[in-house]
Structure formats: C-alpha cells, structure tokens
Image (cartoon, rainbow, N blue to C red; front, side):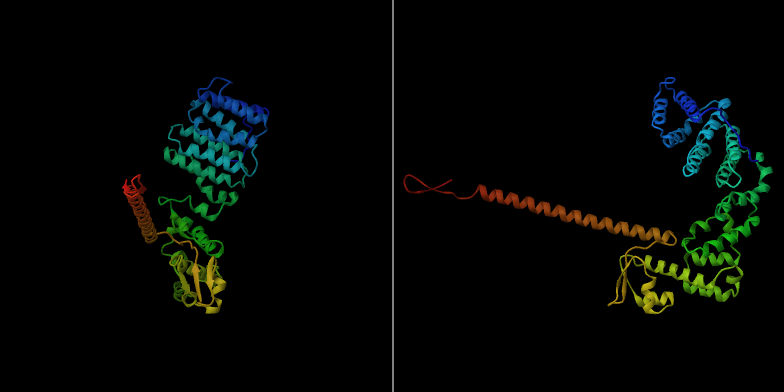
Length: 382
C-alpha cells in the first residue's frame, strides 16, 4: 500500500456532488433528477452548505452497498473524492463513518470493499492517523471474508507504519488478538503501561488491562505494577516497591510522581465508598499517610467541615466497575424503588383520607337540622 495522489473524478466539486446525489437517488428508486434526495442536495448547494452535504452523503453510505459490483468501486471513489473537500476538523469523522458502514455490512463484495479501502488508504498522507483506522477496517473485512492472505505480505511493515501514522501505543496494541504472536508486542505493551502511569491525567487503567497484548505481560513486574494502579492503594504500592527494589527506576518512572498519583487513586477509592456521607480527616490522613492539616489540599468537589474535621463527599468516580459495584448500584436502585413505593403509598393514603373527609362532610351537611319559623310559631324540621 504505497502513497498515490489519486484523482478519481474530473470536474468541479459541484458537478461531482450532483453526480453522486443523482446516483443515490437512483438507488433509492426515486424519480430521476426529481427525487427528494437530489432536491435536498441541490437546495443545500444553493445555500453553500457543503458540510451538510457531506454529512448527508455519509449518512446515505449504507445505500451504496446495494450498488452493482461493477459500479461499487467507482461510486465509492467518487464519495472519497468529494469528502476530501471537507474541513480538516470534519474530514476524519466523515471518513470513519463511511468506513464503519463497510465493515459492519453483511453483504458480500469483500474484494470490492478491500479495493475501496485500499484506494482510500493510498490517498492519505504517510503520517495521517486515518491510515490506522483504514488499515484496521481492511483487517476486519479481510478476516471476516477469509481474505487475510491478500494482506499478509504487508504485515511485516506494520511497526514502520505505526511510527509513520503517529498513533498512540494503545491504538497499536489494540490491533493484536490472542491468535497473534504477542511476544513481539511486549516492548510496546510495557511502554504503554509506563506511559499510562506517567501521565497525570490518566486515572483509569481498566481499558488498558483489557488489551490482549497487555495481558501477555502477566508474568512481568510491570503488569503487577499496573494492577496496583488499577485498583490498589498507597499501602500496596509501597509493598510493591519494597518487594521489587529498583524496578520503578528501571522502568523509567519517578517514585515521587507515582506516590502522588497512587494517593489520588487511594482517595478516589475511599470517596467512592462514602458518596453522600462524611469521612473524617483522620481516616483520609491514615489512608494517604499524610498529616491531618494536609487533608484539605487533596479534596475536590467535597464539603469541608473544619470544626468537626470531616469531609462530605458530593460525588466520586469508581476506578473499576466490577460485580461489587454493580451489586452496590442494584442495592441503591432497590432502595430508591422502595422509597418511591413508600411515598406513593403515603400519597394514596392521603387521598383516601381526603375522600373520606369529603364524604363525611357531605353526609353531615345533608342530615343537618334546619330551623324554620312556621306560621303557627312552631319549629319545623326539614
């Protein structure tokens, strides 16, 4: 898959757009040059709303899958040529949407789909991260259609392409499956773990641990360290450091930075167990191994009571969401459900009481004694 600056269709963009819209309209079985789709496209063109035109075309991508085999590649090439006029911000989104339609489609035409994707791949610059997305789509279709032999000769160049595509290490590792030789990805997997621990903004490691290439590190020390950052605490981190002297530094990590991060994660776990409840300064200080007068500087989105030396947790995010968390969520939902049922019962009882009160009042009114002064001066009862 070499880079080729392919030109699919000659002519101005407007001509290409109308040609494509006319083809879609025909596939939809609409009247030629007078169908709703061509009319909508023409109206958008007149208003110079090109981005909306592109979005409309991508939304109709699934219809292209009904195109005859001999026209399939050409019409997709026309779409690719049109989308190249989109803004740099929207182009990747549009391309990825059109790719998904090809990958998830159950039609045959595997060879035609692979040709379309290869054409798209070859129009992208060497360093475009979109090349990664297109290549993964090619792998998906080739695997599903038993055409993997067609791309096997290209796989030895994958490591070189990854560097050219400027994709993240995690994206690269996601291309590996249990059937691959995962030993070749160990270096990249280890690097991904180290990068995740190093980056201050990464506080969740669950997705990383689901990658097959990461699971292949299960007998490595870096994997044990990852598990500590996944759901461990400060005490467990210190135990790892004591048990594996020099490993943190050997991995290129800073013990000081690691300690700060694991303290934040320890606090997150503690807070998730006390949402809408108070935690004492003493409890937090003990868990983080800090002085009580340092507690407030570690808290975020919590109500501090300096007199009682407690913190009311407003909200917290779970570091992992396991069966334990699902059970807790289920218990909360059951509790809310019961509370709601109790409230509804109270309302129903109040309505019954109100109805009985009205009935009694009406009965009392109808049986009341009215005194009328009769002509004979005697009292009459009505």
